[in-house]
Length: 618
Image (tube, rainbow, N blue to C red):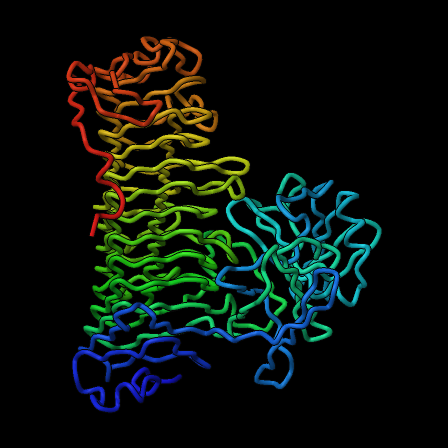
């Protein structure tokens, strides 16, 4: 690794890296390997140029370009360390991530029958998956020589994740890839979404590119009016641009981190499905075994995976007023996916006033902020949007196993327009496992749209315990505004839950212990039932302390699992609750101001201001 003090040698020579403030040069700092920030950088502030032009990047320029005619331009691929042309799965053209040749051009196709899985000793993974293609897809695949198919990739959406596999063979309408043995809960099925990338016969639209690995070149179709090309690929294998290790009190200010590689291995890439891209991804910047490392007014863009990861045994620090966009996976990871009892965990990290948008561009299951096995962290006043999966995820201890993920705060975030109807089983805020003292409050969540099921707003998943969810506004979700798979002693209090498409509340496992306390919430909808189909009567059979909630269907029709409100209250003992219009100013226009005459106030509902969610004005 290259040390930071040597990267900007000319700019730092006079200071000799002995001053507390190190002014980084304007323009690009182009890396050939990961930059190390170690103990010798402790106490320093690395400050970018005042004009905001300081950029630490793994970019490699592609060109010159040759017009091949027919709307196709070509350029040679750069050579890798082995002296051979690199293989790339990412290309940036004129400041944007270009679209890889893809079948279909937009949307997805479905296998015509369920995917066949067979043991295969000759497979690299020991298993082979074979799927039947629709005729229009099979025709395009059949048009490509077998030798070239090896550089194409099948992307297969598996509920909450996406598997990515090079094509092994094609014959008679059936495509084969080497895959992992399927788990019972994540089998590939005919209803799932698929596409094929880097297929020459799909290279047919302006703005698309194709990696001709056999010829060692990139082909590109310019957009209308695109007469010159400034094109870059990430340096092969350079997943991490900057690694901070065993440093303390280090600050980066006004620095851009851009164009990291999506994977370390030489492609074509194989990625097995896993939730939240937790096994697949690294980060453009990683912090390990350090204290109080801060990123302030920094920008992370065009990354191959997560933008920033406070990974192992990190204490304090965080990201403040940063912007992260065009991300290969998600925005910020905090903590490790695995934890052993007695190990020190990352703690006290903050993500405040950040914009995290347009993630999942290579690893679609990337999360806006992922807290895994970390404690006492805060995620507050952020805007998180444009992801294919969850906004904020907290936990990562399955069931009721002991967990170090405690006392985290998820508050005043604006989380919206996620899922994009491509993945499933997600939440605006998602929790997993015991998390005593964790508070999810004052968030505004809307526009959560899943492919098949599970576009939840607030989602306490397996074993969630000891969590308080209050003063949140949730609307425009595909499934319940609040859903608990199973958990213990969580509190859902003083929330506004509005007009989910298929039902408002779900509890999908009834257990012997108390699952929830659900009190002083306003639940309002325009059609359908109060309870989502996945919960059904389990919402009644679960041990839930219901009290002083306001329920209202806009047309005044009471639907509670097929019975009246009064019957339902009697069965579950929803003490002191009412079925009445809450008297919002205009809830359909998202004005949730309550009239002073609102019956919710008599129940003890405490009004809160949704406009406070999101980034604060600077």
